[in-house]
Amino acid sequence: MKPELEMLKTKLRATWIAGDFSQIAKAYTKGAEQFVERLHLKPGMTFLDVACGSGNLAIPAARNGATVKGMDIAPAMVEQARENAEREGLQAQFDEGDAEALQYMDESFDVVATMFGAMFAPRPEVTALELLRVCKRGGKLAMANWTPTGFVGQMFKATAAHVPPPPGMPSPVLWGVEEQVRQRLGAGISSLQTNLRYVSFKFPFPPAEVVEHFRNYYGPTQKAFGALDENSQAALRRDLEKLWADHNRMTDGTTDVESEYLEVIATRA
Image (tube, rainbow, N blue to C red):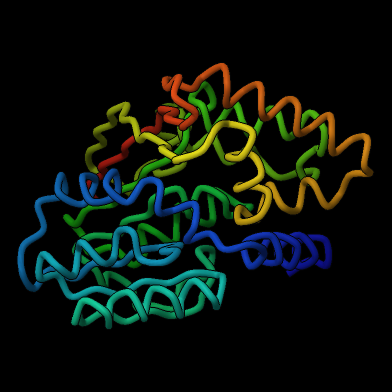
């Protein structure tokens, strides 16, 4: 690896190790279960959850009888995923790893899935090749990727106005654009279906506290605040609070914000 890339990957790993992503992932547990349901898994199918977090896809896949492996760049997430599987008495293997260099053999899985995970790897073309490499021919590659125009895409945009992303790294939300997905997967697939789907972020507290929740637990938000001085932090907080308030569907002091994502279901050629 070139030194610049190695530094970038080290920085990105530190971002996802920061905070406690499981506290964020809880907000779309139901959406993850619905995503897995639409894959129509059958007992014995081999399933890989790439950038698995605390197991939002892997756990429901294991409940359906699939033979499950999951990997994540953050050691704490791998451990939490193991604990969540053990708590339910489910068999699943979780490993620390990199979406750009998956540690699995070619054509190992019937289904390779990732939800709001692999989209954040810095080299999308490399990530696409790896996802396809470990998927069996005729198998499914399933992705859930935030769109540029959806709420989370807008949250990233608001944050980037205060803390620019690393130079040379494509925006992760380009994985939420069908044309980009089709180009990146290229000849590696024989079919591609996409659908716009939605998940709801529901919190029992108002938008201002949601911003603080993300600052405490969501690595990218935590790192963004940490890169700013006090005055700049206050400006970022104002922008994020306004964004959450403007999109909040509740008026009772709680928060319910819907965010769009692109569901990708591809067949490996």
